Image 1 (tube, helix red, strand yellow):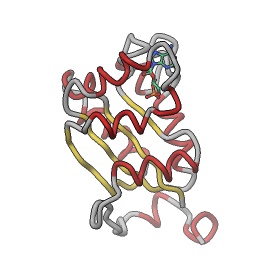
Image 2 (spheres, rainbow, N blue to C red):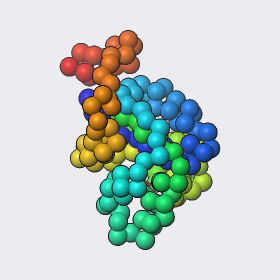
Image 3 (cartoon, rainbow, N blue to C red):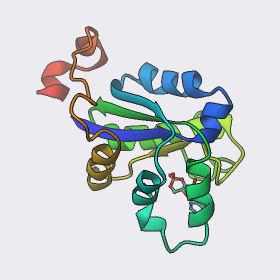
Image 4 (cartoon, rainbow, N blue to C red):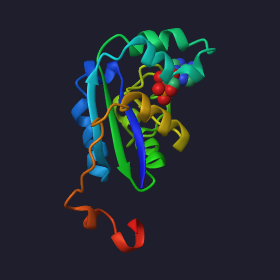
Length: 156
Ligand code: CMP
């Protein structure tokens, strides 16, 4: 099982897309284990995007991500990191394939609605940053687990 971080950016919140986007992840069979709606502090966003600090778009990106509420979510699933990235689609929403979240809901490179961890290392750091407090993450067992997966072949 893998755990990954997803952020619904301020454009997704302002455009009333929290429900439709969360539905994509739920319907896929990913397990929601953390959920927060917050205006995250500047320092949190700066730390989250520290790898991009030298890029020309960094200032705008940090300004955008602190411009309003963001939804942070954590999901569990077999291969959850690549599965979530595939659901989200290409970074530039204009080029994202139809059927992906960005491909279906957006037209922008910068305002691309969703961030998703791109590797196990990034997921570990990002989960610690956004869900690092005790009780931030909930361990629970969905009753349909044995229908979403073949438990013997895929989860043991
Ligand atoms: P995200 O997956 O959150 O990771 C970095 C973000 O920077 C990216 O999505 C885009 O929203 C934003 N961004 C804006 N301009 C660029 C760019 N030219 N190249 C890459 N990312 C960009």
